[in-house]
Image (tube, rainbow, N blue to C red):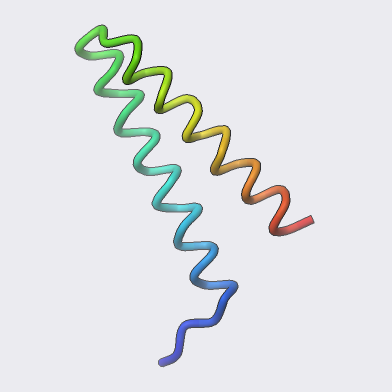
Length: 55
């Protein structure tokens, strides 16, 4: 089974979103605001990538 560019981009977006969710959760649990901020910016990047890649 070969990996198409669409599938690879979709996988990148999913990984970004899951990583951001983990960072936001850890940031809230530990009250480390910098980790929460990085998680929020990662979510923004994931959704912008989705929006730009799939108009």
